[in-house]
Length: 142
Image 1 (cartoon, helix red, strand yellow):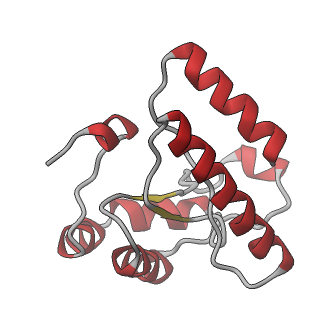
Image 2 (image 1 turned 180 degrees about the vertical axis):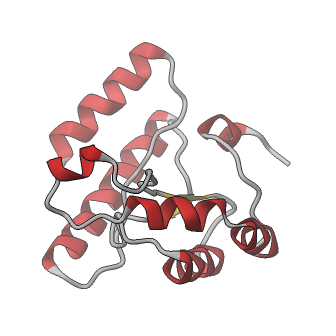
Image 3 (image 1 turned 135 degrees about the horizontal axis):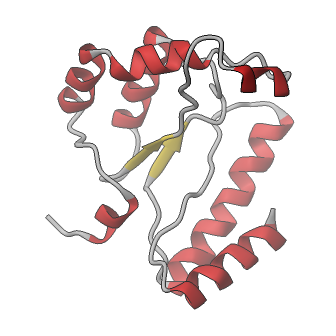
């Protein structure tokens, strides 16, 4: 939301943070269209202030449901996208985690944990040309 984005950028400036997350969506639903429109605005404002962010991202549309097959497709989409950096938002967790009861979203955290720790996932990430990193790596030129 624009008001929240402005606050986040102000806090980032005061705290000396040079990078931030910008949520994106590929969904064609009203929510997806709205998220895309707002993310474009936030990207422009962040760039104007010199705050870095990943060139592309996914995970909002698949939140809590990234099993091995969906995770593979998400990595492939990120690799086909623009830019040299990408963020994959995930929600991994242990099977039977009591915190799941707090949410009605139908998340299957343990499927995401299994997919993320599967050696095939690291192989796919590397084959896509990515290397795992942090937000601090966004400012590193190669």
